[in-house]
Length: 565
Image 1 (cartoon, rainbow, N blue to C red):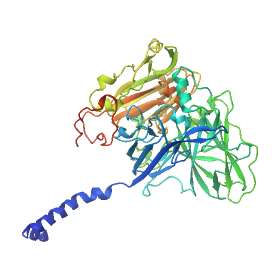
Image 2 (tube, one colour):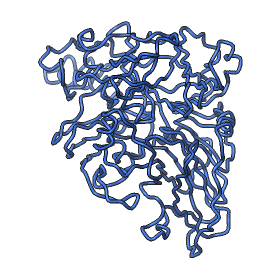
Image 3 (cartoon, rainbow, N blue to C red):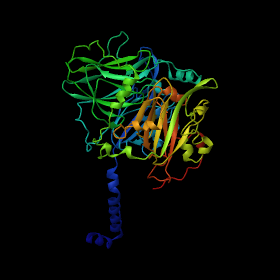
Image 4 (tube, rainbow, N blue to C red):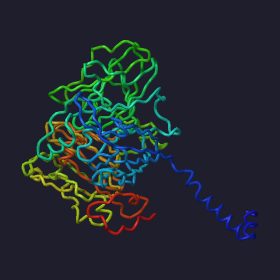
């Protein structure tokens, strides 16, 4: 203190130096505390490949199919400069990344203007307080059908213990159905009111596992005998639930959609569209080659793909005895009931996952969402509670931010509890509902159809409370798991059944709740949830980024006042 007082009595330059020191002392902790940045440059182009033996146009990222892996760590800032070198506008979304306070980076048509051909846009988001296995994909049109997808992993920080030993290696396995039609043909088919039919095949990391002559492809992965490996498996397809298994090996489930699980062993696992999970596999069998296998589930037709895992030094081909997939959806439902949240595992923060006691929170609102399919003006449309979503030319989030929402869409055109007759006549319009900031809401996903469905919610991780056959009733709550259901972002709804989820809507923004079956999504089975903070505060939501693309009715409008602290 005496030294500081002495400096104050000295020359003006000494006083200025003191001011600089005090300023640095004030700001340096914030600067030092900023989380690391990861920078990527993506060039999005078309290319010609033959995933199923038929030459077709695919979407490449930096000449790669699938696209490059994003390997991040909790709280990293991810900066991706996307150059769109195809002939159509495009967006990318980050399936499962919550974009806390930042729906500006969500990359859906309801939040962002697409990147025009020949232009670029830089995404900047933080993988805040998350760990786990995710993927990205193009959200515009039917682009997802022809590539542009890739793995996105969020590793735990070194200070946060993980409930298993570090694996010898960490592999990404992207499984999905595949069509040989171009995305433009598929879009025009849907626009004409027709369906796109059944997928032509399945892929594992962009391959069927066989070459044109029927011989096995080269091994995808290598394991050293006695070592344990992590496999991150994501269903990046358009339509089919898939079963995944590894010949002669047991898989220990350790993570699903960003949540650590109780570590049960499985011979095979169902992975529904949009879901990701992690398993540990120990190389404890006779050294040779083994098949990974994925198969279509809940279909009357057969679709399969394989990939080879090689024990180091092996020259022995895999056995032709491929383990069969399970049969029926009852088996799948029972497997889902076996999944449990690991309540003692550390989360992205030091506190255990189970420190959030979701079962003791009072439900403030129940929303029932009922899917439907009908012809509108002679063309097939899918809907939720009688409204088939249609994206306006002005993204919903921009319209809301600029104060012209009433010019672009109406809120709450659907009821929380739709009457059966209300869904018999489908209306095509933007489908946006309000959710009160920080309310704990129960959502019932009702599937009256004979095919399985799968829903995803951007911006959040929710608790799947229960599933059952038939129609949901208030008495169904007696079957809920209120202790240790696995928190996740994507959930299946079995045929003529219901699934109940619940979550606290504490992430301000505009968030897409959608069917992950992309044909259904394209034809309207989706909605947006607007979550507005009662105050325009940076505490709850970030300002619109300076590089935000503007389109539609907001072009030329004066900028709104920025949020304040």
